[in-house]
Image (cartoon, rainbow, N blue to C red; front, side):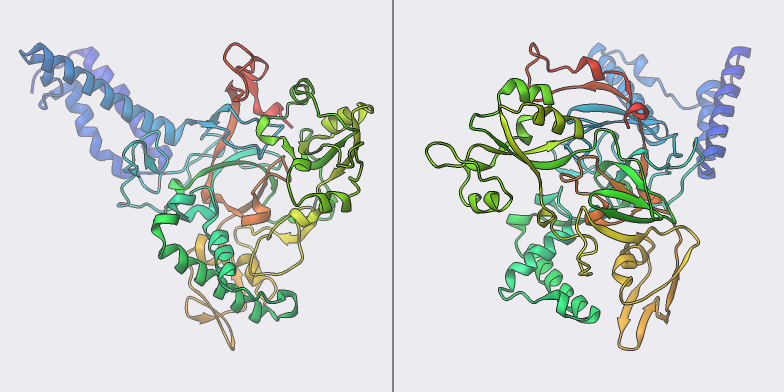
Length: 497
C-alpha cells in the first residue's frame, strides 16, 4: 500500500466519521460496506476511480468528465431529496388562498424526520414516472419496511403538510390524479341503471351493494386499457405528493358543522384565507377584469353560470332570480371567496345583486363510500382519528370507517362473515392500531379533495413540512405583466395561517 500523507488521513477520518454518524442517524448498518471504498479513495487507491483522466483521447476525457460529474450530482441529489429537503410546486387550488397555484416550496424532510425509502433504487427528481420514457422511475425490489429517523418534531394541528396520497396505492394510468376506488365505484354505478335507496338497507346490505358497484367498475377499467390505461399498484413513497393543512391529530374526535371544524366538541380557529364557493349575481353588468385581479381570482376559477344551459332552474331555486330588460337572468358567477373577498364584493353595491353560498348538495360522496351516513363536506362526522396503540370495538357502523386502515395501511386480512369479523383468520370484535393517523383538509374547502373524501393519512405517508415559498408564478400573466409574484418570494409558510 502506498504511503498516505497526513492530510489524506485527516480527510479519510473526517469523511468516515461523518458517514458513520449518518448511518447511526438512519439506523441502517448495511451501509458499513461502503467504508472500505472510502478508505480506498483517500488512502490505498487500489481502484482507479479517476482512470478517465489518463485517457489519451481528449473527446473521451471530456465525455467521462461529464459522466463523472452527473453521477456525483445524481447521488448527491438522491440523498438530499430523501433526507434533507425537496422542492414542491403547488399544482391545484385546494389550499388557496393560503398557498397559490404556481407557488414553489422548500419542503423540509427534517421537520418530522425523514423516512428511509420504501424503494431505495429510484431515479432522483422523478416521483413515479420517468419523463419522455413513460416508464417507472423506480425498481420495485428491494422494498424496505417503513422507518422514520429522528427529526425536529411531529406533525402539529394547523401545520401545512406534504404527504403521499393515501388512496394513490392503486391508479389507472390515464386517470392518475383520480382516486381509483372512487372511480371504480362511480363507473360501476353506471352499469346498473336502477339504483337502490341505500338509506333503506342494513349495513350488511349496503356493503354488498358497494362491493357489487366497485367490483363491476374495477372489471370495466381492467377490460378497457385504451380508455383508462393500465392499473398500477405503487409503494407508499411512490404515490402522488399532496399538500394540505393538518386539521385533526391522532386520538381527536372531529366534526364539521356548517363548515366550521370542531375537535373534541370545541370549535377550532379557521385559517384566515379559508375559501368557500359562492354564486354571485350582478345587477346586470359583467364583473370587470380589474376587480377579478384585485380579488386574486384566477381565470380557471371564474365560471359564468348564467351562460350555460340547464342551470337557470337551479339558480332561481337559490334566489338568484334577478332579470334584465330582455327577461334573462343577469350574470351569475361561480367563485371561490375568502371572507375578505366576500366583503369586498358586497361593497360594490351597484355591481353585485346577491351572493349565495354553494349548497351542500354539491358535496358528492363522502368517505367512506360504503357507509351511507348522510355526511356532507360542510356537515361531517363526528369521526374518531386513530392513534397508535389505541384499541376500538369494531361494529357494523364503524367498520367501513376503519377498514382501510386495518387492511390497506396496516397490512391485515379482514373478512366479514355471518358470525362476525375475522382479522388474519381469527374472529375479533376489536382492533389495536399500529400507526398514528391524521386528518388533512384544504383551505379552499369546497374545491379540495381531502380527508373528507378519501379518509385518514397514515404516519408513514407523511413526507415533510413546507418551510418557505422560494418562487411564485402567476399562470394568468406574462413575464412582463406581473407573472412573478414578488410579494410571495421567501415568504415563510408558518406565517400563512
